[in-house]
Length: 198
Image (cartoon, rainbow, N blue to C red; front, side, top):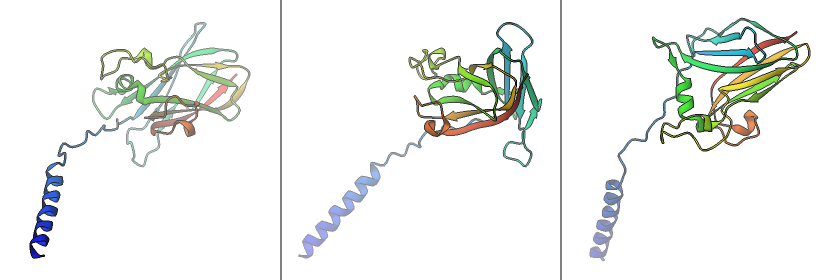
């Protein structure tokens, strides 16, 4: 009986040692979130005209200061389609890092969302998709065609005021129905701009 107990203990110890020795000691790769201090949006009238540029800048990140939005009020023309682009920067570095480069290289893991609210008479459509960008893993263009949103269009109709919220999500569900609720994922940056159509 004593021999059986000793053998049992020896076997149990062997299993424990075996399971410890099989542990993978390679640390899991961590994909660090990019620091994003600045969002710059450029709207260019498709029929020609002066581009409209506005931005949100938050140089202290999670610090006590709120982002600075300039200009505070953005005026668009009635019945106009604008080609839009959004550029994200990390201005804690010098020179400033263009975060768009990482978004493009991981286009299948990112998506901008454009939410119009407050009675603004305008619509937003995506003007790019994943296949427009080159994967950092394969060195080839993505074969999928889910929207990304670095490029977009905004079309105004009649005079109105409201807001345009721009949100970048990391690892959203794709495809999704275009809403933040359905997309999920983590918010990398979000900002709301006041727009007037006149």
